Length: 123
Image (cartoon, rainbow, N blue to C red; front, side):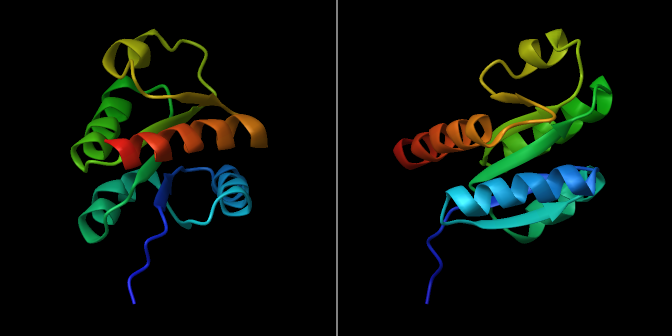
């Protein structure tokens, strides 16, 4: 039996943030959710295909662009979670990627994920 539910990967170094995002996603969508640290992103993407990658944007340009590029090359839709204030670099490099500020609320998170899932289905 094939699982056709959307697969979402949360790549976030703060476990409590990742668990809260997982709760919001599993309560709002019929999906599978996996969690990894950002430094495990490449390995996670090598072993499974994901529809959406929810990626922590930590404010370290070199690392953030590296991980963003990995997620983009995987073919997944992407969304950033961030507590950073200066977002000019991310907006320039990834202008089409939704950005959710931490701490986030359920409604914002669900709205962005719904848009990404619709984009994935039509894309």
